[in-house]
Image (cartoon, rainbow, N blue to C red):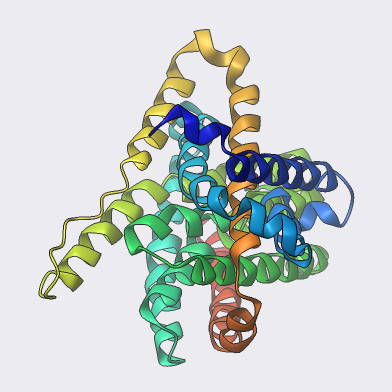
Length: 332
């Protein structure tokens, strides 16, 4: 990779525009209402809005592909610092077990339901991972081993964002009538909702105890992103190895960086003062990657293909909520 590439006009324009979208999305996410949508999805929407300015989109086209690819990987690596393994292993062992059951079960179910609705393999897998693990970050994390097209990734992110917001509001509305303790409600929110922002918003209704347990349960699901991405890479190799073209196992090596960052952030106290800054940089880079995807998305494809995966994911989100309620009611 040549340094001169970073000085080219198209890359500088892409950097400037995507950074502006990411920072604007981060700022908007601090306001009520927008916080349910979340920083990354807001950055995606802002990137999509840039398409109305054809000149800017054309000027940035040479750099958006690099940002969507490389900045995404770096962002996911740095996001590992948010995952405190020490806390999860000390107070979240039970949540880890629940998360493993929820993620594996819902991943398989959502994929199968999507396929029953005649959703293509790649889009079905992206949607299943987004709904089952951790929303937009999961979609982007498995896009590499799936070799997903940008339109598929954007569509899956949009589906997860819409459903996550809908079910956050549903759970907040159900909180007074479910009869759960604050701890139970927090774990239920963390096990069932799609994005960390959604889990925080819903868990917060049950106070500090609810929010803390929602975060622990949600991060337990996030922890499963790396092994699932590796497994998907292996399965894609098995699925395509009989094709005429030469195949290699699409291992998402950046997931190793994600786990390493988690371990370093959890057990090396010398970095503790930098953790929040590193996580902030991670979200900024991920927001830039999302904006770059938005600048390249094909709106016609999104409209034409969105109904089937959305319907399948909605059905599975209802089942996910029911399963999470059952777990906390009968096992806690």
